Structures are given as structure tokens and as C-alpha cells.
Length: 291
Ligand SMILES: C[S@@+](CC[C@H](N)C(=O)[O-])C[C@H]1O[C@@H](n2cnc3c(N)ncnc32)[C@H](O)[C@@H]1O
Image (tube, rainbow, N blue to C red):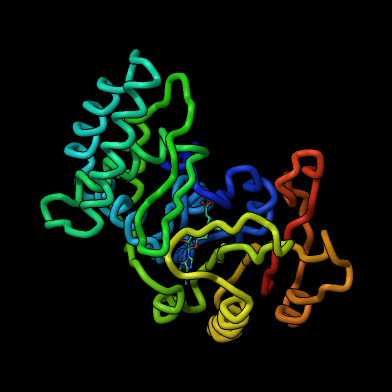
């Protein structure tokens, strides 16, 4: 089984069993407009070997990392191996110094990155993801990565075998960076589309996960609903995930209204509704499908 190369907020590894039930029998063409860590992508690449695949995400650093894994995996793992050796077996204080330096280096490459530094930037992206607090990717209003160091005893910074395997799986994959609407022209009646946008927050106090400088508010959810209506007309098969507002307000019909023409199922997921751990528990999430 192929696992994502990063930990990603909203990652679907825990929900794969429920999502798999919805996969069509054959997948010739596959598209994932909000790919994130790609839990579903790697599951599908492993099992179905589709002929044509397009993935997209608005986060340009994440997308650069996908491209470098696909095209330059040897150079990438050679840098990551060096990072791993430097980080192993040293005190937390020394690790903190290394972490801050690497974060500064990454942020300076965000501002000014020559083409020959793209591999280094991808290596730093993976390093930070493996050593930061909770694998979060969060940026400030200027777009700079600002997550503090996490406490892991022996983080695996360079999983060479897995990166080599992912590189092979990605060889035939087209990779785009931008808004989800950029995927529209690829989608036709042979395409299976899995759509996993930033979730609509369940409460106004819910921690907002900022994957990028842009916010994904209710207007964006509606714009996505219109996109779904358009690609539905192509005859593609579509599955979409989102949060279930009914966990906190039984009268909130936002998604039941937006996706009234589709089949909506509610699946069990263990997620945090509230930052208060006492209120963690089983909640439901939505899976919307057009078949
Ligand atoms: C819920 S996550 C996807 C998680 C993914 N399924 C996984 O398993 O890791 C949502 C993703 O949408 C991306 N995103 C946010 N706004 C976007 C937009 N307008 N167009 C495309 N991608 C967007 C974020 O960068 C983030 O990676």
C-alpha cells in the first residue's frame, strides 16, 4: 500500500475504507482537483493504474514537491538523507536551531527561488512537514510558513523506498498548480473525479486550517457546487467530501441544498469538532456522489 509522502490537514488515510466503497469498477481516467497529501490518489494509482491522471492543488510548494518527487527523486533523496543524518541522535535544543534555520531557508526560497533550487525547496518542504508541529502547513498573511517545531523522537525525514515508489507512480501523472476550475477541460465521461476541498468549518470558533493565503468560505463552496454541476453534465463520475453541518445544527441544510440533485451519504469519522478534547468524538462527514 502506498502512503502519502506528507502529513496533510484533512488527509483521507483514515477514511479510505469508506471512500473506496464509492470507487467505480474501472478507472481509466482520474482527476483530483484538491489533491493535498493524495491519500486517495495513491490508493487509486496503486490499485487501478489509470491511463490518464490529472492532479491539482493551489498550494504551490506542495505541488513543487510532487513535481520534484516525480522528476528528480534521486537528487531529492540525497538531500533528505543528509538532513536525516544531521537530525538523528542530537538534543532537542540543537534540533530547534536546525529547524529554525531550515524554516528561514525555506521562506527565503519562497521569495526568491531560482530553477536550480526547486529540488532544495522540495527537500525543505518535506523536512519541515516531518519535523514541525502536527505536520501542519500554515502560512501568515504574507505567505510565509510559520509552524513551530514538533516533538518527535525519531522522525523519518527520508523514506527513500517510499519516495522511489511514489516517483514511479507519478511518472504518468499531469500535475497542475492553481484553482480547481483549471481541471475542467480534462474531465469527460471516462473520468472519475474525487473532490476534497477545504472543509466548511463546523463552528465559528473551529480552528481554521489555512493551506494557503486564500480562504475557502461559503461563497467558494457555492462556486465549487457550480463547478460540480458543470462537470456532472460531462458524464464523469464524481465523489465529493465535506464536513456535515448537522453535527452541530440539525437545521443547517447548507450542503443538502447545494447538492440536492446528488446522492448524499453520511459516514462516521473521528475528528475534532471543538478544540476542547472532552468534546472530541465520533462525528459524521458527507460523501456526495453523482451515481
Ligand atoms: C482537505 S485538503 C485535501 C486533502 C487530501 N484529500 C488528502 O488526503 O491529503 C484541501 C486541499 O485543497 C487545497 N485548496 C484550497 N483552495 C483551493 C482552490 N481554490 N483550488 C484548488 N485547491 C485548493 C488546499 O491547498 C488543500 O491541499
